Image 1: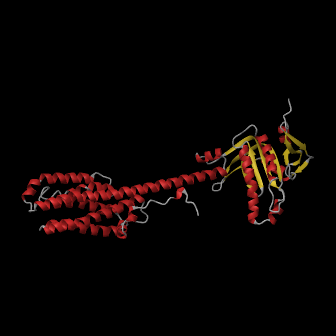
Image 2: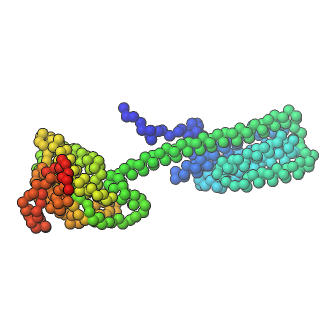
Image 3: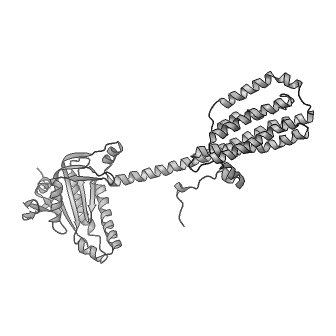
Length: 436
């Protein structure tokens, strides 16, 4: 069984997903596949809430017809028809602004028109309370303005001004019917507003949870990218690239370059399969990586079975030569413990030189940190013209490190591209530093 990652938590179930299929389809009526999450929520709010109010208005139509007020019953019926027509058009155009404006105007105007037809606040059982939730719904629909609230206050003031006139021509409604309608006109808008807010806050919280989850995934991906970047580039160089530096090049007057090569690797590669070959190289280079990191020495690259490091880059250090020589000794010791699939021991051929180099980042898409210069070329020649199982160094390396390390002079060697050179083989670190 695979353990589920903490970053792969299932998304919170949407309230839309909990609704019956018919309501789910209604919520997605005017949604475009390319709509962002907030636009989807606004559109779902428009269709669901307007449909809810249209459905609830059936009770008012029935009551007004029952008490003999067909003209008053026609007003919520007109609202129902307008909602149906508007949503049909919305499903076709998918433009929320138009349908939102139409529905908000209906929600504001028709309750007041109904109240006026019934003879004002008292005889109409304050049916205009339905218009009071329009400013709230406007905000939930995504209309972030004061227009609905201002319109409601104006209509309320107009109704108050004409209350006496309207009451004089009010139709008869029994006290029991008025009381029942009062209750309905207080409870109905409250229920509609509560359900709208409940749906909105649930969807908002779900969206926030999804954003938090995505943010965690992004942070994890950024951390992974950071680790990959630091595996490719030294930390100071990576910092410069993150800071916007596009060209990185520097000269270092004193560094030490080491090249290491596995002896007999070419014939060995012909004997091994691809997987065994890669596994063997990985086993060797992982050990070398750990040794270089522990010594604070920068790995530059691997080319085939060749391994290159530089001491004193990108941050200069006074002991770069000693650190690289100690690393060479550790690498030779470490590889002696590695065996081929045929149980044969491996050996290295190592070359070292010290001196000035130029370092920098090259490439645009697959960039790399590299070094150039005569010191690099000479260290490479020390390796390629070296002795199996030994570390060959230049004369300047031996002269600079003789107080800390023992060297064995080698006869003059003809080095390709360099002519005849006097070289030395590293024996090991001195047990004690001689006085003076």
